[in-house]
Amino acid sequence: MILGNRCIKQKDIAKELEIAKERVQHIITDVLGCRKVSARWVARMLTDEMKMQRKTTCAELLKHYEEEGEEFIQRIVTGDETWVHHYDPESNYQSMEYRHKSSLSPRKFKVVASARKQVHKLQEDYREAVTTLHDQKSLITQLEEDLRNVNALSSMFRGDAEGEPGPGDANSEAMASIVKEMAPVSPTLPVTGDPSSKSAADSLLPIVQSQRERYRLRAQELEAQTLSQQQQVTVLQNEMDKLRSDNVKLYEKIRFLQSYPVKGGATDDVTNSYSSQYEERLDPFTSFSRKERQRRYLELKPYDKITLSMGRLIMGNKTARAFAFFYTLILHLLVFLVLYKLAHTESCKRDMMADWHERYAEHMMKVHGAKDPTE
Image (cartoon, rainbow, N blue to C red; front, side):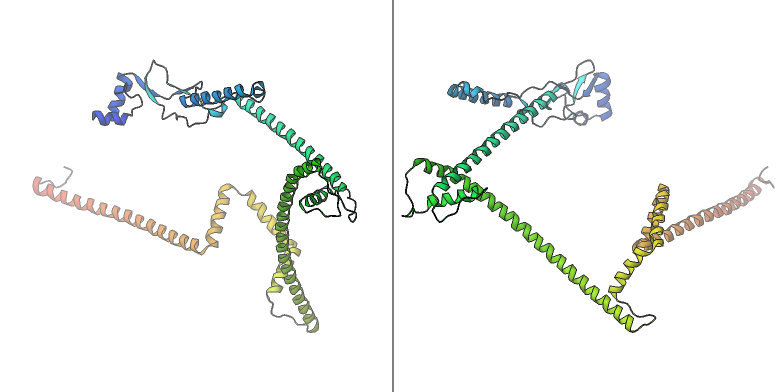
C-alpha cells in the first residue's frame, strides 16, 4: 500500500486493514523502516504549459524579426523567465511521502525568483521609466514649439481692430486662430490657400482639445474646493453667531448685576459653561492635582494599576456594581455552605464511630462473654 501511494495516511491504512493506528505506526517505522518526510526545495524548472508559452512567444518574435530585420532586435530589452514563476506551490504537508530511512527526501521545484533576477527586473523598470521621462520631455518641447508657431500664425491673420498679443498669452491666441480657421471667412479679410497654414491648424486642434480637457478638470476641482469652503464658511458663521449671542447675554447679566447688586441668584447654562471653563483655567491647584494624580498613577506597579482600573470600572458602572455585589454574595454563601457541610460531616463521623464502638462492645459481651472489647 505504501509503495502504491507514498502519501497515504496512517488512519486510511488502519481503516483498510481494520487494525489499530498504533499498530500501523509500529509496522511502518520499526518493521519496514520508513518515515514520512517533506519534499525539499531544488532548482526551479518550467512546466509543460510554461514551455509551450515560451515556444509560442519565440515563434512570434521570430516572425517579427523576419518582417522588420535588425530594427526589431534593437527593441528587445531582455529575455528572462521572471514573468512566468507565479503559481500556487505545493505545501510541505501536502508533499509528505513515506520513504525508507536510508533513501533521500523527495524534491519539489522552487517558485520564488532569485535576488539577482529581482535586481535585474528593477534595473529594467528603471530604464523604462527613464525612457518614458525622456519621451515626455521631448513631447513637451514639441508642444511648446507648436504653441510658438501658432502664436506667430495668429498674428499674421489678425484684423486691424484686434490688439497685439501680450506676453504669455499663447493659449488664447491658439484658441482664437482655431476659431478663425473654423468660422467662415469675412470678405474684408484676405483669403489664402497656403497648405502650410492648414497643416498647422490641423496639428493645433488636438493640442487645443487637450488644453480644454485640462481646463475643464481644473474648473471641476475649483468648484469642489469652492463648495467645501462655502460649507466651512457657513459653519464658522453659525459658530460666530452663537458666540455673539452668548456675549450679549453675558453683557446683559453684567449690567443687571451692576444695577441690582445681590448676594446670590439663579444661574443658567451659559454662565455655568463659561464659569467652569474659566475657573479650571485659572485655578493652579486643579492642574497641580491632576498632574500629581497622573504622576502617582505612573509610579504604581502593574498589578496596582489593574486593581485601580477594575475598581474604577466597577464603581463607575451600575451594571458592574450589581454584578460585583451578587458575585460577592454568592461566593460567601458558597464558602459558608462548604464549611457547614464539612463541619456536619465531621460531626456525623464522630457520632457514627461512637455508635459503632458501642455496638461492637455489646457484640463482644453477648457472643464472646468478654467484658472489655480489647480482650
